Length: 225
Length: 225
DNA sequence: AATGAAATATGACTAAAATCATAATTCTAT
DNA sequence: ATAGAATTATGATTTTAGTCATATTTCATT
Image (cartoon, rainbow over all chains, first blue to last red; front, side, top):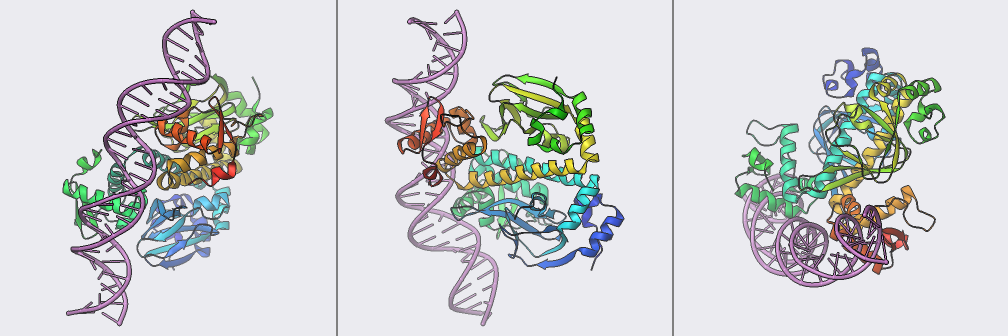
């Protein structure tokens, strides 16, 4: 099994602020796991009792609404941590985490993380920074949900995925989402999401290759009203 | 001017985790201020350079959307801190803070707070907990915005204000909001908010005394579809 | 107490998005 | 390779909420 102190992934999250000794200690307690596409890592109400460090793959964080629809709140990618929020408040999970492709995760038990949060102020400040960033993004999503049309939200979602998670060599978005996932990010019906994507296509803003999406005119997408 | 170490307000926020010495130090740097109803404490893009501790009064945190409407993201009351998120990321304010009634605030400069965040792990863990709680609430609002009707969101807003901020002796909500504020919390047009409130009134779920709102049937409100 | 401004209220109409129905296409497992 | 399932796509209709117009009420100021 790999060692945390040598793992390159930690550079992308708060674990980078841990000392070599702290990483060695954590490494000895961690467990690696492989999660298959579509599998649920944890669901709402689960006691997570630790954090996951995403070594590879992508997952969605979502919450089931009373109307039966699943609202996606965040996309978590390679390098991110998963489950910090619940760990800190000591509550059960507020969201469900579902793998969008095959994933490799390392699980670090709660006590190890809490120990470092209380003893390494640089680390806890880093976690605080990540949480503050997530909170800003969440506030911005609230504003978008409340004030923008489905068309605008979908355009912004495509741009967000493009800018934050990149593209494949052929120019398609590297994060492959179903139309249903898009609908569940934007907060609309699947048919509406599909309809709007079709319109974007007709307008030459995007192209589709199967279910893959390629941006043809990013400035046009940004100007969508 | 009052002394932080004797101030009862700190019991309600993370400042309670500071030692007497730390509070004395902070007390010597803080400035008190009175803000009038309707005044803006800070706006989007401002460098706040510190946190505010709300000694009295209520304010709204909102963000101006591109369509010209102001979306309210959070209500901040007596005992809460204001401005922590921006302080931690070191960014300018993402939201505007506007007093909903006359307020009394204490401003603590950034350096003092950062010093304690890095030296008092109990304090930084407490701030982390508050931020994690805010993030959970924000995630839940995203789901509601995306998946629920204006009618449901307005019913839940009334219940939220009732449960979290309490009522006056006559049973009306103690946080007095204009119909426009309600619309800006729910993310709808003022006319729509007013219309739905009128319906609630007709259905006997609420009563209105001027602009004040009183819940008549909280179970009915919870069951609104 | 009177006046004007702001907030609240309601109606009529329009626009946006959801729902229901049904095809067409793509993927999966045998 | 092919059947069946799942996903994507599009049309028709209904529902929800936004916009515009206009009263009515409340509130602050003189």
